[in-house]
Image 1 (tube, rainbow, N blue to C red):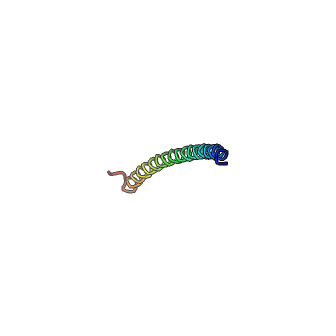
Image 2: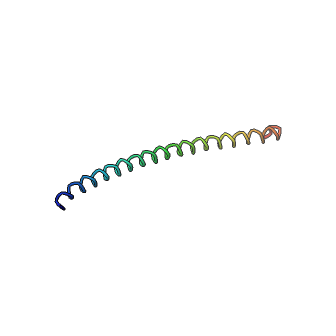
Image 3: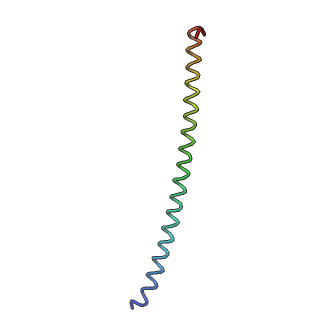
Length: 68
């Protein structure tokens, strides 16, 4: 009986391992995409903050009559 069960169990384990590998691959790709999106958001925020600083400097100069 065990001789008949062993191949079936092995095939089942192999199928499960393949499913696990595919799931891990999908998880990796999702995490990679999220990481890239976060990087792009950081770059956008950096640009916005730089623009905000520049506009603040211009506003201060304008308020002071441009004497600086």
